[in-house]
Length: 132
Image (cartoon, rainbow, N blue to C red; front, top):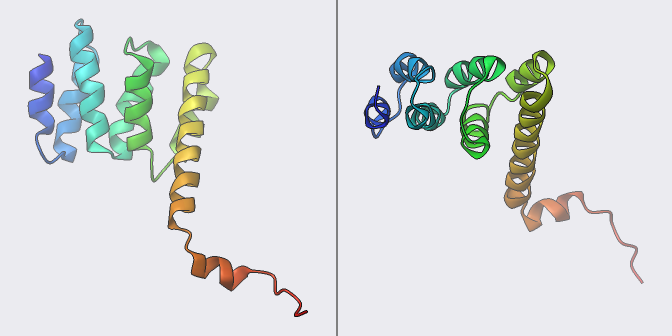
């Protein structure tokens, strides 16, 4: 599968049906195809799309770290617990990478929560000040 074929699998609206061919492309000899497959799975942004990436990482997936991190953060956004399962099963550099993905997810969640905080919320939970 060529890198352009990976992009065609996903198309403008990523769908669940694109996961099997992209997962197969992760085993390609071509590094560009593997990178395109990881990016395509990341665009799907579903936990189901993260599983092929995580499984290949355990057995050696030669893809740049930033590409893996980006795809995994997108796919595991709603279910970061899946990452914890794989951290427990992994070792060495893969374990460190997955820990960094969890850290990135945590930072994004924290930033999102801060951006959603409104002054009205702070007044609601503020400690009353004594009148002078």
